[in-house]
Length: 110
Image (cartoon, rainbow, N blue to C red; front, side, top):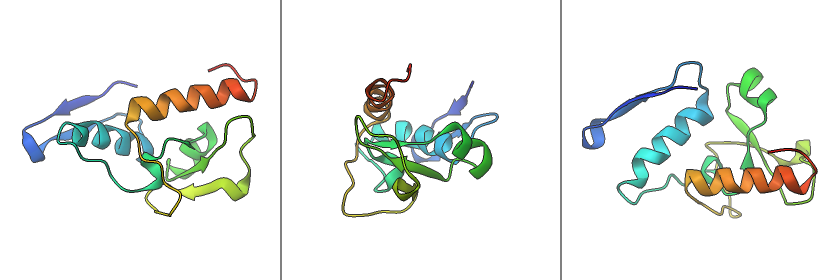
């Protein structure tokens, strides 16, 4: 997925053709990280994984809070902009690393 980003302080914007809400949130998180800021929502949690189906059918507005070695269940589903006491907020690269580790931990290729 290609992206076009323009930045001028807080007035920056990022366009991602074919993206979803989670992709847009990740782009915003990357821009905010330059200012030392992280959104406080499940979408910025280390263990949030947005499945392909959630992206395509739900616009990327929901994801699963997963645990290494365990499959995701419907009870793990959360809205990416919601909050809770169990949040472990991280950068986009750290979240992507965890996603790959989780895939490997359940026997799937990254």
